[in-house]
Image (cartoon, rainbow, N blue to C red; front, side):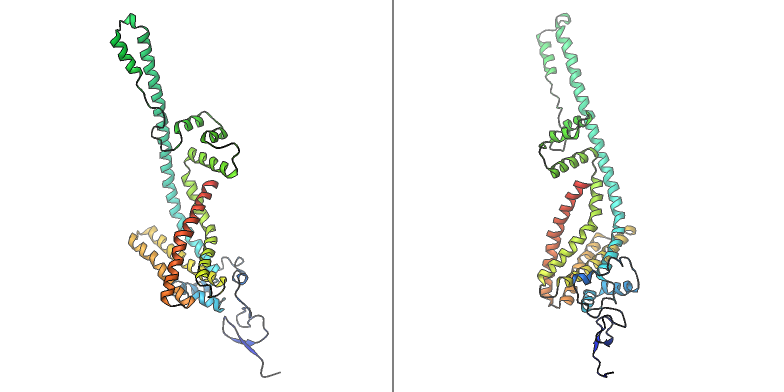
Length: 357
């Protein structure tokens, strides 16, 4: 046996082993494990909720060493710390579990407000009915007097007074209405049992309207009847976790645009997974504490602002650029994501929630 056997070193545990091994004999990691999208998501789903010592070993660096976990994972230490996608999924579940308590309370309050709106609308409808009845009562009072003016002995001055009473105009339409359409007519159509198609036509929908137009009118009528803003809100909140699976890759794409010569897209995706995991941990802590003890708003905002400086430090360490360029690039990436990508995404999500709640 040759004494000069070629040796390789494991990227994960850094132990030497003979060349030709497909897996490290010390830790089991693949020896030729070039980072690609396929490698990044390998075995993530099958280990969705595995929780071991790697989480505890990863948590402290995640919170207090910005960019460290991403740098180590890209370097090849992929078994020593929790997989970035696995970390993100686990922390996201915890965050949305805590956040759901606030959503339930907010929806309950919103449903109460919508019930009051419905009650006010019914009250306005009753007022309109009473106004209509009062107008009829005036006519029924004046007409017999005028018909029997000779018997009663009414002169021309008395007749003019009766005419002035008859000419009193009591408004009948849109009392207290905040809608652009005729609310009284809508209520009348619904009360009379008119079909949805008749109401759509009354609202202005054309007969050859397409699927989404019809869906929009159907949901609009459904909302008017039930004031289901709470249901829309719940649908919106339930859709956010799914939306994050699109938003996180977009954030990674922005990083790729500004650091195009700093590795593959998969590297930026690793960085994004760990950064979003950090964000979810921070906001889980904020929501969790506020659940039992109200933190001053100023402190909440300072903590939220600190996440930008975490991003800045993480970018400096991960991409190895000077602080000035890193500050400019991280600021632009944050600006584009917070003021363009997020609002546009949530607008689309809100529209979809309205169409399918």
